View 1 (cartoon, rainbow, N blue to C red):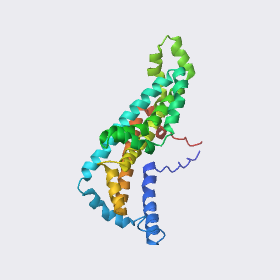
View 2 (cartoon, helix red, strand yellow):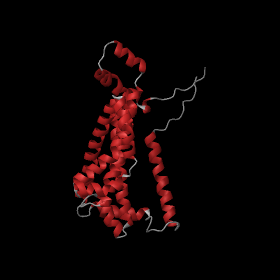
View 3 (cartoon, rainbow, N blue to C red):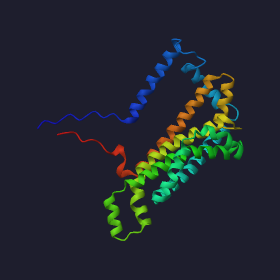
View 4 (tube, helix red, strand yellow):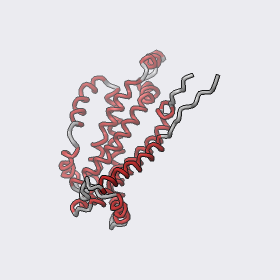
Length: 266
């Protein structure tokens, strides 16, 4: 029989890169046509000229290190708490019924409302921003861990119990591996929320950090510099996504969605 033409498969990174010039062109047209005021949206060339000024500004490296430290420590703390609570409530129906409504209600409180209280308790320094980032990201890891633990095959659970496996062995050897894809989804969401939590806390009150710099640039109506910092935040989010995707490929290689391709029909 004649060979069928294979479907054209364009790599996902190529699609993302191809979208970039489209967005820049739309940005350029919006500013050049006067549809948007340059005070609200500076033209791309103005932002490009502001890049070296922002990167070479006094204290930029110190502020960058401060923000990245807040994000990483807050993310690690929040993920650890969320994962631990997910395991705890996932192993006990009584605890889940007692505390899941409370934790869900707590997550409904906007983190920006808690920022003044956290600053009062922990101060303007690193500790307060770390706690804010941890609070922002812990629930995503918690709820995906809790949900993922229920994905284990009931027949496999029954089989392990018939072989007299302990609850700990069932948890470690079956439930957690089955939950890993969902947990990594929560970790990816949590990374984004940790970045938002740290930066929002710097907006409210801080003595250092990229959010602190953005407030200063905004107060002086230096919109181009503000957009440079926004691009840095985007890069931080992209870096966290790529690192977690790499980790997921290595750890959950048997269920990674990018490794599953639809077969062509015959």
